[in-house]
Length: 256
Figure 1 (cartoon, one colour):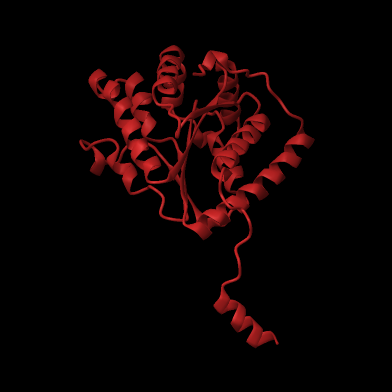
Figure 2: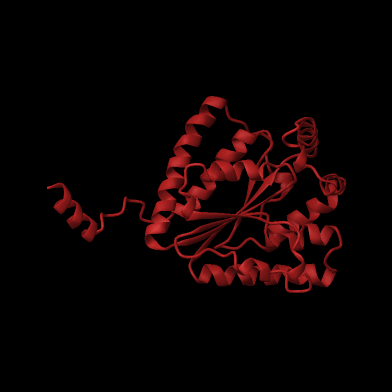
């Protein structure tokens, strides 16, 4: 199982290669989305990563060429008051994909074994048993033919600090920075331990983790989109759908 210390953060690509590969990947993902809509398939795409790792930017490029009717993006923050005191997985059930839909999570139920563990928002008994709960949750979904793609975007401590500063200097991005971001970055070591434990204990055959080297945003986006396309496209008929016979007959009558 991969650990954060094993990830090569020096990986880069040029702007020209990035533009070429991004365009091809977005077309490929659009084709996959149409196939899922046609066949009523379902998928979950989970993005986790360090603060300022580039999750939002990667998601924007993931869905840029998709039909908005075929996907949903769920930004996950602290649970709302109505979910306080309830099981932490409850709020995710209503966000699971309907047939033909891709559900994309910008953070997820893994908060239980990450921020809630490190910040003491869950007791040790609660976050320790969460590994089995999460594995069971995902096992139920994959047994019901929901595909699950899980990505963790990894960046160095220095790169994170540089991105924080860039955000602070940009009037249009300052809103992204919070007190919690700085507090969390000061606890790098316990977060690294929690992340490595998560990768080791919740990666399964049908729902494995993929760690994205995120030091260069261009490389991270291509790596992430390639992984999503490979996982979602595997074994799926990506040929264009046939014309509905009734539509074909009406068109023949109208245009002949």
